[in-house]
Length: 172
Image 1: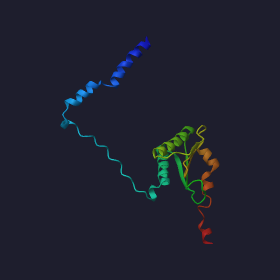
Image 2: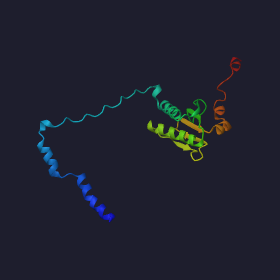
Image 3: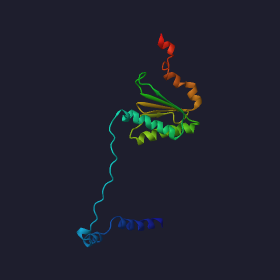
Image 4: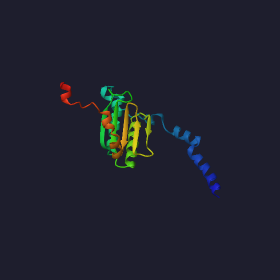
């Protein structure tokens, strides 16, 4: 019985999909040529920004990462410029989440924001355990961790060694 009703519906949907030719021809012939509506105008395109130092891909990516982490209220966000220290990335972002679910959500949000900007992450690691999730964006690497994991590994100390030299050492 169910198959009969399905077959009965197919002809109706087919007739709706393709109107009879005589009907469309009739509507065309009844309108005078002068009564036709003007063609619809396309929406204006968004203005293209000129390429400058502030709008380079790394800067756009950096802003997207900061926006994503701010959106879901990441805690204790640190941005470390590692351009002179390593060739693997230009920036490292280290942020904390309040729980494994928050850590995973923060990493997912970073990926969403980056994709919306038209870029693709190279990889995401640690999502299953979600104690430490690494999002590799090429020039930027984002570490989202639980506070206890962050304290244990101390990535900020590792990557900022030698940055804050005491003034006494500089004078001698």
